[in-house]
Image (cartoon, rainbow, N blue to C red; front, side):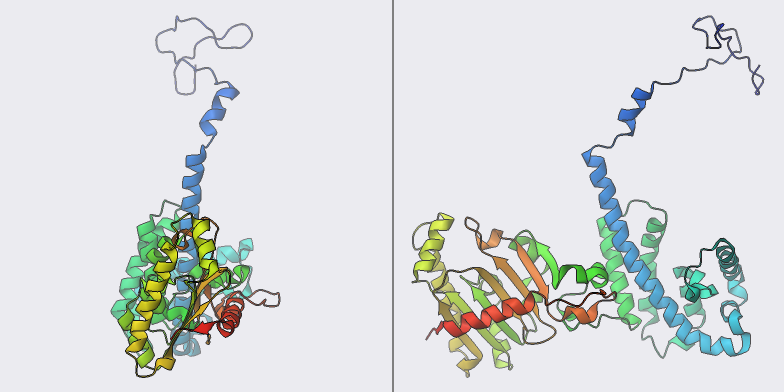
Length: 416
């Protein structure tokens, strides 16, 4: 008789379950255990399952970094504004006092979690041994809303803060419960986080961030990759993520070296280049000589008709000459050609300053420039890292390509 009052079927003499199909009324049939070999295939993950899991982990990891940055910044802002108001009277209980009667439930819960963490040794950093460290984003938001007159002198728009935190709430719940995060929600969370950090006065101190926003992961572990901030398999994907308008727009200086410089000539308006030069900017364009033997070798490498590439380069040069001809000061817009074997193409935007951005492509033997891998470099990025390496900073790639451009420029000749 089982514990539930049901009769179990009789076993055989060896203690094993009987094989008879004659089960008495009211008895429960016990299934035989599965063979161990039958469990294996059900537990295995195929390549598609592993890909899905890794994708989920990557998205959740990126979202967590953004949420962590926002939470730390918001906690610091709340402490800086409210601590001087409440701590002189209430001491270490200033957070409890600031929460007031409306927040008694959640602030007491935070106090209880803090005590448990103390007893179990979960507080690894003495700086975290305070109630504020145990408040969640919604609770920090509640403190800010309750005391908005205290924050108003430092934060321009309360609505911007609340809208950004609203957008982050979905992501926060998904990440905290380890559920799937869609790419659209992740992108929304990243935009909201960046906007909120800027509103709270924690925008990136990297000058070039106005042109190429600093990514949260880059900001944390950027020292692992020198000054390379993005890698694209081809130029199409580069322009999809980083349009020519974002790259060259509002630039004060453009230095470009390559065969035909299609990324600039065919994707950025000549009028914009003209306005840049008239506004005090400087443009230096270095093309491969369309009449050189090097361009003939490149045509053979690509397997295209003789003269096809040279005519395309010549058309680009003529277009840039027409732009230059409209300038009162032609010295602000220089065009030169070189005769050496082309090794790479590089676009250095504001390369003489700490806010410089560079787009670099190596030439492959049978691959057109549109299809070649692309590196995006950020000059002066070391000053913007949140976590700095203990090792001595190594020189990045940006100065290398800038120096190579200057050497090539010095050895080239002007186009009249």
